[in-house]
Image 1: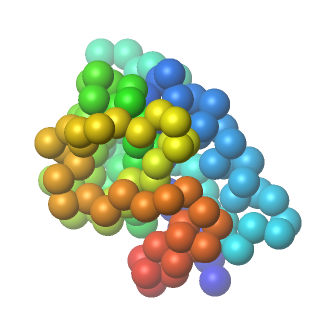
Image 2: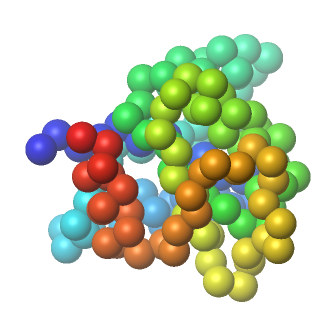
Image 3: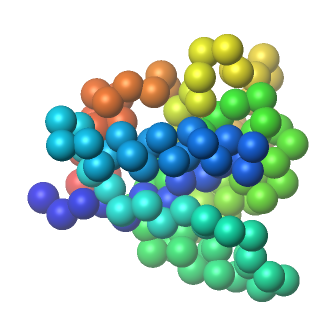
Length: 128
């Protein structure tokens, strides 16, 4: 099975969580693997165009959901973009202590699951 091309959407304050997720996928015991296509540095003025191109080339988008999400304009735009492009999205809770009480409108219709290897692996398998 080829690794899925996955865009990871995250608030810049949650960069450590994104790094952890990418590291987790590289663990030899991990039941899943993917190619990380997330934006790793702020774009210039054309970032939305570049970002849309990246998202369109992916099999799915994993959204790391924390209390930072509601104020992360770039992340909220990435979620809207993925929906507009018809790219499957799943949310994962960043951590138990940092869950927002209300999800932003951009996450309406996006299932948010607990961050476990099995949950992520099952979602990636569903992209076949």
